Length: 161
Image 1 (cartoon, helix red, strand yellow):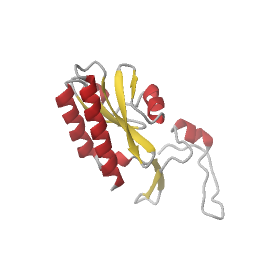
Image 2 (cartoon, one colour):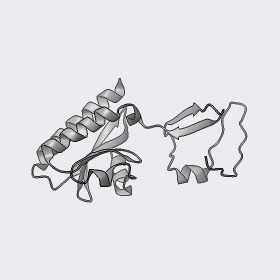
Image 3 (cartoon, one colour):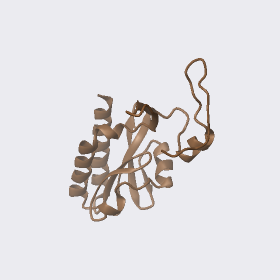
């Protein structure tokens, strides 16, 4: 782990403030869910929570099926990283940071076309933990969009369970 040189004291309620510099650097926003766990060395680790961490195979399978139908590049991402991809450019997309324009579009909580991609948000209890995206140049954009909406809704239902 990287030392930051910042020391904070715990208050009487057991709270510790994460310094603004760290929140800004890691893009942690007010109300964002955090996962807390300990290591065998006795460290306490805070990590941004990604609901997709428990669903990697389901999401990968859906992305593969969307690619089969649309015949274009398809990706699934959480708010920070691309977590699944299918299509000719799959290798270029896996594990990259989500473009800032996509993050902005996800915050709008509705389908949008951004930089040649059609984004379909995945909703979870009013929040948008991520989206499915496919190239807007697909020969059947309406059908691909409806299928992506169906898959996003299905992932939302799985997240609720």
